[in-house]
Image (cartoon, rainbow, N blue to C red):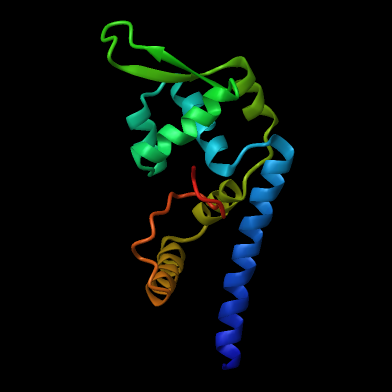
Amino acid sequence: MSQRTDEALIAMRQISRATASDSRALAKASALSVSQLIALQEINRARAISPSKLATKMSLSRGTMTTLMNKLEARNLVRREADTIDKRRWYFSLTETGQKMIEQAPRMLHEEFSEKFAQLQQWEQAQIISALERIVAMLDAEDIDAAPILDTQEIT
């Protein structure tokens, strides 16, 4: 391999390790996965949200969202409430325990990235996105379903 190839692989490995480290730190500090914390944050922003709207916001399938929310509900972090008008519809809202979990959770890596990325010039952002998309294509990873979060675990 060439030196340039080594440099590219090292950079990708550093990103992968930073992401894994962040996921482990969050799990250790809060006993939550990144996807679980993001679901709690989205519910908190909306106050109450339907499962399909939450799945769309998080770029997840309905099946994955169901599994995720069942786990949060079993831990008493969210509650399921029926719509007052249409009883066939229901929404998730946070429990008091869920609210405390959000307040105590550490800052996540993708939040830090988002802030720093937003400070870049538009052309710099476009250049980074282009390079990352090229890497995805080189790894034949275009068909891998991914949410806009930095997490090393499957979202289940």
